[in-house]
Length: 306
Image 1 (cartoon, rainbow, N blue to C red):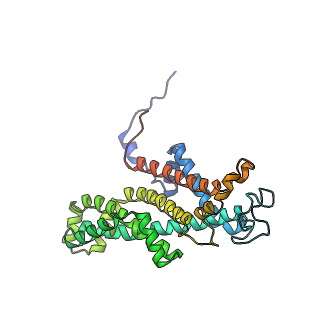
Image 2: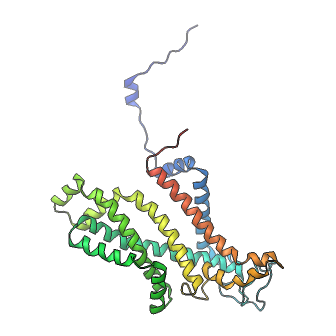
């Protein structure tokens, strides 16, 4: 009997055509290789996004609709009961996802736009621009952010626009420090110097030469800053200077229903009611951190030991 002997051929190997994976194929491959914590985090984030986008369709009642039965217990009519003036808590939690998460995303994007642009400009021009921006950031970071935000919101008013701008400016100081620190190592590269010698403008060098090479740490920082902004908004709402009624917000819902905790010994479900928005805040924070940890590990080039 004769057996087929397969021999290696360099000519055949070089003649093979390898198709480049599409973006969607790369995403699916990365998802299959991701740990269970990252999959859990991505699933939770997707659920929150869907709830925020479909809030008017998912909520059984209106955001500020009042019923003539305050502190109604859990029932088939009101899944999580009603609050102190008779608003359905389940509906307000759904609308709270859209308000709290949406404002946190907008604030984080604005903080990265401000801090990232100024950080890149300071890294490129190490003269008076760097000195002015760095010293201004040092002054802002010397003041506790939460106290500073409380003072500014008390002065300018607790509107959604003021809330976004104030928190974004205060949080942009952290983004500025990170962007400048990672961009300084890229600015000295030969290709950046070549772009400057060609006469390219500051904006072109920032967008085309530096930003693509510092994206991984910035994307990871975006997830972390989102968590801090999300918790800051919830804390300000809990203190009464954040998102104002009748707009639903998880932080203000904890404050409004905190009195129900003292009735936990008589009705456990009533005692759990103020913990529901707090659990929603904690779950999203943990999920985002899981995804950020996985992304940092993936972009760092490290590999787990088998």
